[in-house]
Length: 372
Image (cartoon, rainbow, N blue to C red; front, side):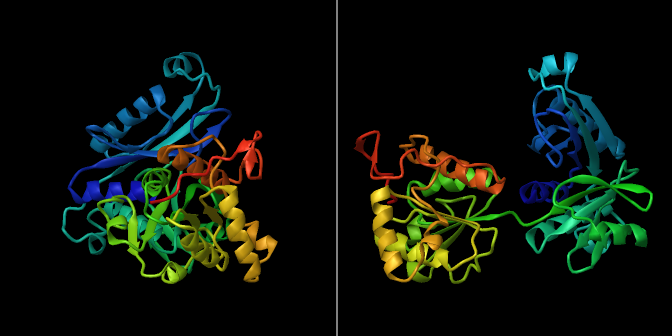
């Protein structure tokens, strides 16, 4: 959501109207679920998707119309009959899509001029929340205008006011995903607005480049660490934050690893990998993955056990990293890494390597590509 909010604010800052389309309810089988969204303007799609096909075409057209009428709208689609056939999707489900137009501010100052363009200010407030500690975006459903209330975890509220009793109910509701909630006789569409999970890639070699790109495309906030300036540069990783470290043994010290962070260890050598994984095991990171063959992994594991780490500690590490799809090229390895991380993100069962040994199918295991 962070990238889409940033694009919305950039569009408004450029003086252009835009409309946000969000799936608020999904029933049965449909291409995308509640919370999926796209941004479109009078000239068509800007970014995002609600599933593609004819439904998306109708939504984009409705967004263009909303930029002219400046009125929100609610569209209902049933994925069967002619619509499913035209979309090449025989799903049989239903989706409800909320269309919200946003008007750009008429001043260079945004938040102080809330009364001039409340939609613009709402987008800025949501973007600030997504970059910070997070919040919940609340709006009456169906809406009569684009009016967001932003409820922060510290008890503060920004944006449009809410009835006190409704705000009290909504603050105590477990809003972990987009949902319609009834509060004090009014329905509200609520969705969490949180900082995306971070993927911190240790090593800036040839596997890291496609991994960083795919991670950014799938919603991670990407950081890349290397001890060589030319391998940790914005030119090499245009969609990532880059960090130059002088010592892999302390390269995570300044990042304050959190319980929802993903650590991908793809340095250029065994020593650096061991130093990096030691730091990772001292952190609460959600995911720790280390590239390499099982032989390399076992060598590092023996050293870690000698240093006092337990087998339960080592069980936190995904190594060889990624799903076993026979990946060989850097791009294929990146796909396997992201597939495993996405499975972990959604709590999906993640296939393991077919043989957890130095040999597979009676043959010497092909080691994973080293990182330059």
